[in-house]
Length: 392
Image (cartoon, rainbow, N blue to C red; front, side, top):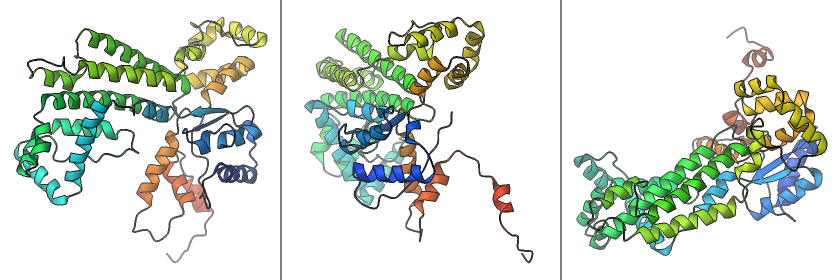
């Protein structure tokens, strides 16, 4: 099972669903590829891409009826974690305003760096916040929390006493500590969802695990226990009342997170149990009689049981398909579709590196293909196709 970028093309006109489909359709026809072989389509939730009537999803399903659309798991995770209560959003807005004040003025950034060096801080700068970057909020809040003392002194030197007083306010610090903790945990989840060879059952397990953690954190908060949040516990130890004053606000946010994750991830990982471990899971209820018979034969095969522990999930089911084609193909139709748009995001990062002001020309179609491909070039074959110049 190979995972790679197929092609890259310019969008010459508007990025409508019709234009995008025409680009894809013309490429497939040019290279004699059939739409019928497409089993999955993954994108973000934009109407142009995901629309059931006029979106790219609808156009693809007209030519590939068996293709299953998947809303990118990473995009869904980012959407589920966006909502904040007014109290917590006020803290985030204040932090972003202070960071922008420092980062948009080179002199202020140098003064803060000098102050951090004098005080022996681990870092000498704050980080810009960008809504378009998945990990931005967690990194920005963590860095500001680590440099909270240095930032307070810097703001006092700049005579911004109102902003500096925020970093002396116990309630503000408690909320800042909690935000740095919870978004740090969301960043950990986001990183677990990234990467190649991430199948939908694997990512469903990660989401289910995080949802269960949210429930456990809610129970701990009911007992006035905040040990799971390291920065919050650190600040609470320095305050006489501890974290009791902000626990209601935190509980509300954790509850909201649980609701949003249930909204964006309604299906749990139990539906993929037979794919992840067929020898322990029950027979799926939606199998046909022929598929059920093959599933029983397969799970009774001791040779396959030994092979299951020695191979990856995709390798195992590819082997099963040779002996039991119906149930093997059913499993591969679940493993084949992309669960995330991670390869596209890699492409965006590669374009940012390739497209510099020093380039006089950029053929993005070929350059991007080489930049993100995992295929090894056949240099000997490429050289043999060229005529050597004996004079050189």
